[in-house]
Image 1 (cartoon, rainbow over the protein chains, first blue to last red):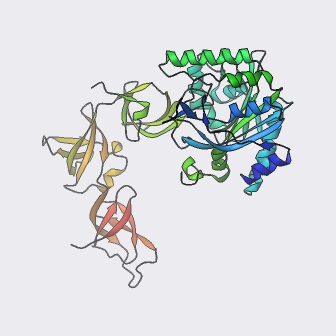
Image 2: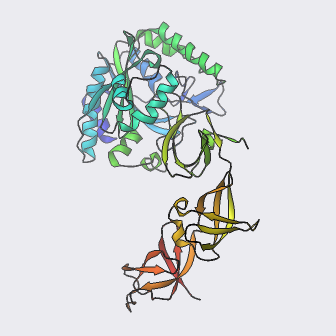
Image 3: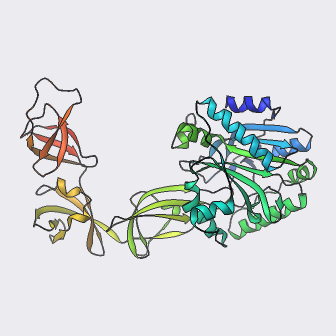
Length: 268
Length: 190
């Protein structure tokens, strides 16, 4: 934690404390937020500090980060806890490639802080990862493609690997260019550690994605995520930038060879 | 018949049908690829052949329960090919081949009570009690005074199994063995 903060401070990033109690907690179809009892109107615990940080970007700060607890329900297992520690940072004036450079440098100092050298980081596109590890391109059905990813591809990404360029349907908050989402993830020891974007700047597009995900949720008999209009407005105002979210507990697990996320957290 | 398990019901030891074959779940893990739908990654061991397969199930998909039954049986004797057991409820006799026993046959002693997993009226698995007692058929003589230094020697039991025992244990003594780890637990006074 200290190595991470020092590196970001050195680079001129300002730490922001994002509010944990929010009125809108997620955009993604498959993310579940923890509702807070007794709050009126309804509030949730945040699933990431992203919404608050984007409003800070819109207000004019060019390099910001946040590190702290985030919450997701229905996620339990050796790599999932309802409460976990997330690091996010945003850098104005770069795309996802600039964030890749930030990430590799940060991984290096974090590994060094526990006496480890960072192995060579591999770079693959999503398509290359499928072809190399499952023997062919991804299935055209997104569910079957995801199943192949979980069953055949993910566990083989043992070296630190940056997987980039997702299909437009998995863009989330990223900018789509030429049918490809400028998004990357970091895998190490078969575990997903981080997710990053060239951040979307088009408020109408964000609103359309939100509506589409909520339609899918309603069709699946799950409650829609409330739309955060302050966020949509902020996305229309903040400058071109890249951003990333890193699962700190999982990074600690991989660096120290811990098998269960509960052992990477105090009193977990 | 016809019971289905949800991914939230998954646990080790669950007996399920995949493509008409019976499997036991030996591993399961919740996974959620970035921004995607949730899956449960499993390892399934074929109840008869012992082959292990990796299968991944999406949340909402179900697995059919294998119609398995664990029955209380008593070990009778080895007829040269098969091990013979008696069902303690129906008193029917049943033979089981050693390749289905996963090495558990070495701890069988006469009248030992065990559980046998049946699938479609066929025995597919042997479950020993966690602890069994047996006498030592052969081991090197005891070393007096050496009681707790952690040093061990091999001892062959009457049932045929060989386990590591502390040096002070003598031939002919009765000991308790943990069948899960195949290790010595303590001496039993008769």
